[in-house]
Length: 386
Image 1 (cartoon, one colour):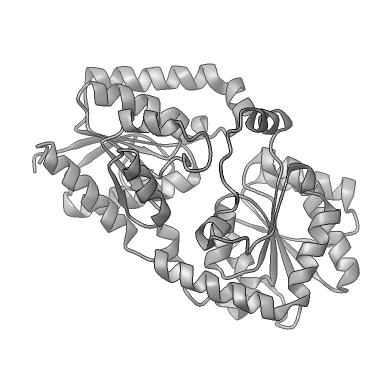
Image 2 (cartoon, one colour):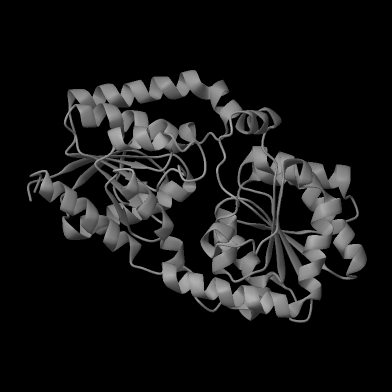
């Protein structure tokens, strides 16, 4: 293969992890590939020539995006102009569909093959986007098995590659070692709170989560409460909420160690999102709570944008509500507390959930990076780029 120049854009930490793994697998097969675009630490470690810090793209929610829209559009125009003037051999958009699909549509129209890695949740949220996807991408790499059938039914070429987390996380979680590292005795009862990785999520969920933990500790004397945090900003928000809503609650905060916290926990109260997938892979019973920006939620309801029964990925993969879900007004202590306590009081139910999560974990475990790289190389071969 002659030297390839691949453009790639990721917007968040999860996308950076996937992008870095794919870049490594591609480079193992063709060491002279050059990468340029937007990414984080993992992609930079694989030799990405960065055109913009990834943090400039990390925006979520209908209303939140509007505030940053002019800046995001300027960035997309700069990237589009660069890659139209000097077309890469391939463009890969990693997640971030609202940003990447428009870029992919333009580049594909100019003859650049395009790959989108991680299916937009068209089966759940704004399903008409599948028409835009069909125009934008030559290949869509899906990380969950139920997505491929939906996409192929709508004329989108797709390849199921699995999720890197499923292969990275062990089938048997080492609870004892995790507790030893965190200074927690084996016989202590532990509740983990995962209020999200973004400041907006933490600001909305810290109050109901902390109040729930405080009430649970009244019912379970000595209950340990663990909270993994991703940065100092979310830590400051948690401190502010503790002082205001649960000043007497002892909390063990752990930075950048969500998997260790999950391994140590008996029960997890978590935001919806990637955390519920990590909770599934950790085989932990979960209660899911989430609050969107009020206007975002109102618009989603008004426009009937949400089309699924479950919001938590763990429940979507299981096909049943193994993790109780409490969204928006329902995400309050009076509903969360009984759901959390029910898991502490029913070890038989917990064992059933752990068995089902183990089955799902086994089904999802693949060599994701290798499969994704082979699918990309096959597309390049089809297009005569190798």
